[in-house]
Length: 612
Image (cartoon, rainbow, N blue to C red; front, side, top):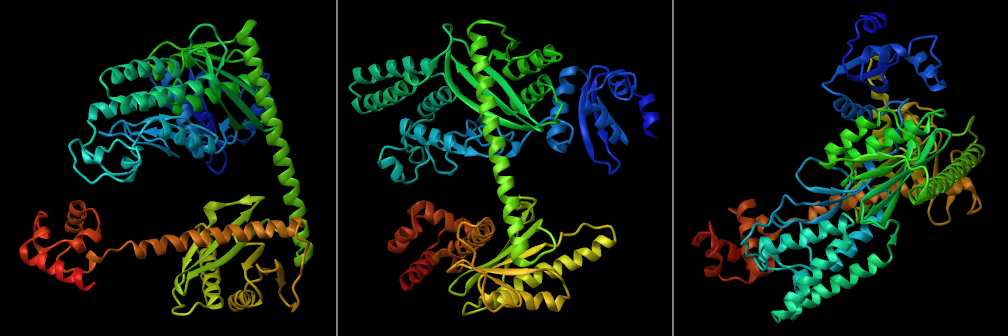
């Protein structure tokens, strides 16, 4: 069925539509109360469409639609599809998957509080998303000074009798693994943590004060002192929060600023009448996108994953179909939510402050991006001259070798492409052909050969309709003349034409093919700074992989060598004694106390541990 036939057969029901280009890629996702009227309106020549719509229509070759039962369902589906496809013509959060959350594992008997990068349906409470990782870490550190939360990843059930760790002995954990706190008492503390994360500090303080007085009356002075310290810490935090409303309302103030295809949305969080925090988000949008559409798209994408939806959300301009958004937000909140556009008074003043902050952050982001783009352009032009390339390199691949005294030899390949690192194109190699003494030359030869052999193989597959690696415009080798020659030999053996250079760490010298003397650039030259940055990233990636292998090889235990000791018995022994050292010190009779350990096996373990 062609596009015209699909337009003619569109239903009048609410739903979501997906516009596709010639390649079948989804370029726009939208929702509609009436699919037929909405989708057909794009193709009416008489309509006064904005430039974005004209550009979109020119690229539409196909469309799909999904009928829903209501407008709210259409809104939810639209948001999910935007996240899935990241369509070119939709407003979307930049790198939204990387925003961290604070996770409280309330589904566990003794919950933990930790930072995570993804929100999943596991029954836990999530707070965020946050754009500042450092702020999240500081929040967690502050929480752990106020509340003795467990930080281990053990699966703990009530009544468990493990040996408590150091955190218990220094007062940083209540010791649930050793049965030293009940599930109910621990849950009380988690309730306080949740109130803190929700920004309801003023509501939390009276509860803690009452419990402190109760503890003191019962002569539980240690508990009373801990509660006193918590109260002082929270009071100090509350004093730094600015009162912005006389009534104790929960509100979010949302404002935005736009420059070209980049928008910045700033959110101020007001809880109990106090400004408890703020955050900002960058969004990709078209140049002629209006403010209302940017805000609508942001609210959909942000609140779908947000930990808390307030009763009131203030925005600077009226949004299209606000009642649908209010209904959806109300479902998330489990209560009525109002989208408001204040025109005057304190609320309008605060909203203007939000928009001013958004503009300042956008100016900072665009000037930083422009500076970085200009610096990268200058660096690439300098490399073009130094290496004598026909044009500035668009893709640079860098290789590095890492080993520990000849063991666990690995190589890394990182990719700098279109002005930034392309981590999805990174590769790592476990070196197979080098054993014993370290040999960086042979290791480099193997890594480069495997990369380019794979590239050639995928080029052949691409001819048959497959997908292939792009070949680099420049290869950077970490090392001196020896490592460079090893890579050049591989390139020539494979019959490739790829420029290869190396960067020696000692004096940051650049070695070029066919030149005996290195090129020495000023330490602050843009070209050298870029090469060092790429080289250091390759080194980091190699070291990370090498350490992971080293860790895997050293995580073994002396128990692994004893016949008859499998994973379960090993776990039981360590759970019973607490460590391998205590197992070594145990007698045969003490070993037999472990369930599943017979007298014969206990004797065998004892003899082996004494010898080892």
